[in-house]
Amino acid sequence: MANPEDIAAGRARWQARYDAARTPGSGGRGGTAPEARTTLSGQPVEPVYGPPEQAEAPGFERIGWPGEFPFTRGLYATGYRGRPWTIRQFAGFGNARQTNERYRMILENGGGGLSVAFDMPTLMGYDSDHSMALGEVGHCGVAVDSASDMEVLFDGIPLTEVTTSMTISGPAIPVFCMYLVAAERQGADTSVLNGTLQTDIFKEYIAQKEWLYPPEPHLRLIGDLMEYCGERIPAFKPLSVSGYHIREAGATAAQELAFTLADGFGYVELGLSRGLDVNRFAPGLSFFFDAHVDFFEEIAKFRAARRIWARWMRDRFGATEERAQWLRFHTQTAGVSLTAQQPYNNVVRTAVEALSAVLGGTNSLHTNALDETLALPTEQSAEIALRTQQVLREETGVVNVADPLGGSYYLEALTDRLEEEAERIFERIERMGGGTDAEHGIGPITSGILAGIDNGWFTSEIAESAFQYQQALEKDEKRIVGVNCHTSSVTGEVETLRISHEIEHEQKRTLAERRERRDQATVDKALSDLLAGVRDPARPNLIPVILDAVRAEATLGEICGAMGEEFGTYTEEPRL
Image (tube, rainbow, N blue to C red; front, side):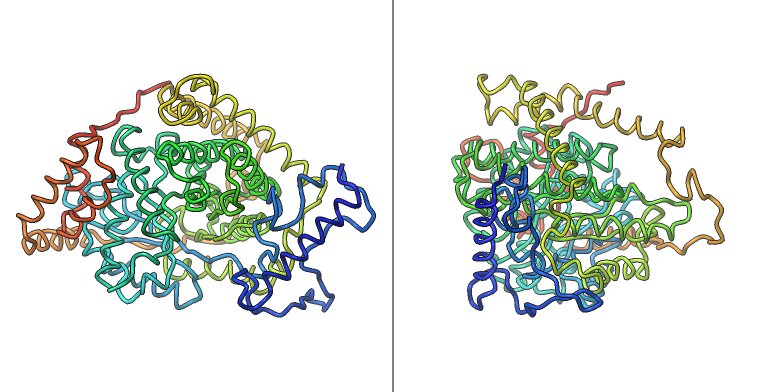
């Protein structure tokens, strides 16, 4: 029970944090926006709300105030008054030149950061001229074969001035090295680069299925990346632990929450096993969640995620600094909620989902386009998706008050319930790994995750949830407008973006020309040195030798192939 004295003391702490953040030159998130905020009708609004003075508030210690442990109500005392969420639109299609044009359009129209979508061959570590890439080049993202493609991708976009997120996991480390080399070729100081690399290989085995090697080699590479960024590029986040793909595969909100945070705990164990200081490396971990269409459940999920992460980081992993206890996350509206039927309804779904992410305290946000269930977004639909966020930010008043729904009986009950369900799943994962008393190469949560991947537990849990939801749809227990209710419509087909087959031919020609121009002896030596480094378990870090190969214009397929000679491949055991 939070008594009136505790509540008053908490409000005073919040006020001190708020005032400090608003002080010019304080380094806080205060910004320069005016203090006074009003509703559309002119009614003044406070920056935060809590229990009335002298009131008792059962359970308020679990809710608290924005900017303090357990961070249920957000990481910053100022909320979005200090700085709104980053508008980070996800884009990538065709070749690097076409995607560069889309990036310029996003930035010129108010986008605050870039998020790179790669095509399927790139996601799987293949060059565009590989037999497995046939018919796939540029279709679900941009094709990147070498550092030269990355140069074109960011041509005219100073990488030290734009935060860049790259959604790729299997070949993430070579692609990151191409990003660094592109920055070098711009003349940039790479030590100040800021952005996020997904790198999350656990969720690939759990849901997305885009891996290159068995789990252990991937974890070696991820550990190397954590060390490298921590030492040389401190603002860059080497891991974005992704629940998005887990949810899109059919998981429930509680499963998305629990599986994602468990993966995050695994990466914390990885960092600790490398001898890294948790207070230094933990701030480099970020998260990526789905914002689905059940409005209040999604807000509760985001709030529970912050609270769970803060408690585990402090109590389980010994993080003493606040930034190491923070769960910072990007959100993307739910692609799986979009429908091919009556696609204009997707604008409404996306707006609702985006609002749930904002009210849940997201740090950055991507809004899906109305036509993404049919094809890559057109320029018009991409602009509508961008404007959706701008309407929320500029017109609705959601930036005026930190955690405006905090204290809602319904929302707090949902938050508690999701947290309890997630904790039960954590216990199950830990038992699968033998528990805390067993010996573990990295840690007990990691052992449980690897066991769950090996025995198919994660896949079967998600499949069962997806099956139950599909049954509910077919029984009309759940409804989707335009699909199993309100199916009549006057709208016709929407115009979609088509990727010409010429893109693949052009990319192959360009790749062949680059191979002709490069110094093949230098490439061969760099790849030989890389293979030698992979085969040497005592080698301190593979990132520098991968960088050397990238600078020599070795291609993504050549680099991934060289490492694969030693790491081998991974095949998932089929299960029914």
